Image 1 (spheres, helix red, strand yellow):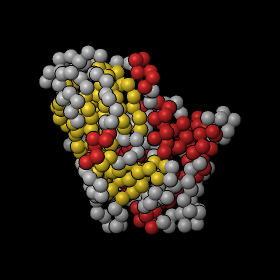
Image 2 (cartoon, one colour):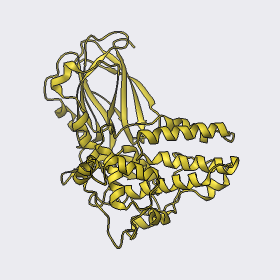
Image 3 (cartoon, rainbow, N blue to C red):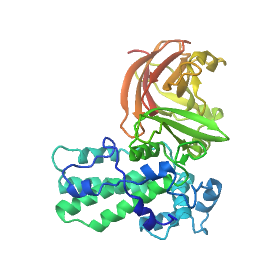
Image 4 (spheres, one colour):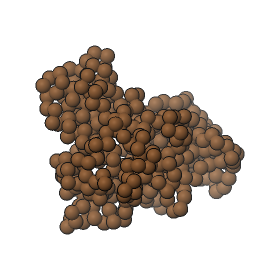
Length: 410
């Protein structure tokens, strides 16, 4: 049985997808010690948990225990043990730690750490990073760990950086081994609930970016996605390019992500109390309403009236049915969802579909976050006409769209 950190470390055998997880070619140690996981071959064949089976996390029990100061699974206690790389933590401890983070006040399933952009920039420099560069990158990883000790990317980058410091500057190899162990353990925990081949064996994640981390570890390249409600649960179904394992898609249980909306989204009844803004980030699978006080020629301020999670895939030729209710003046109502152009279509796109009831034609900027990892990328400078349904469409596996700079003059 694979239960402890020490045992789970024996599963190392598969590599990172090079575009998302750079391995500096200048470091022989890192090349030889790349984190390679046996999970690619064994997990997909269902042999890792042959003796015990996959272990579905009891989310309600985890919620209760991780917020109970008297419980051994109280989240700060687990975080302290994990920070010390406590090898006695078993799968129940690890699941309580990883999934318990979703029940803490500062949990955000779409949180993006800009520190990773800087770190990748340092590691991907044409010239070999200096000791000062590496120390800067290491400090950035520690910032993320402090904000979220369950973020696996932090430990991966720590492993890479500590290994480079050890090889080139006589740094601490033990620190590299500790970070390696912590990363492997979190990855093991994320895949402990299932192999993702079916909804019944879905992998559970707390952040959308972790879906793409897992696929990168498997060597899979995503091509499209869909939100699937089934049996009272919500799933991200991600289709992948042809691969040697014959896997065409993976299921991720996103109940924790969907449930977080109920704790964080503003209600329509408090619309007038909402803070004014000039930019909004809308996650995939959302119905939203925004209201402009007075549309201006320059950047206009607006309020978020409501933001609700939806799990259905929209059918493109049925879009008219989305806007049955009368839209008040100066409001923009929209959907940002996976969409099939027609019923039965195999192709799934991510679409922003909206109607504006502002008296003047509006322009806006849109940016997308591809794969949940990259920085926002500008797409177009788009227009909205009065009471005319408009849409943008992407084939990329994107997670968030940012709408900003709404104005009445281009």
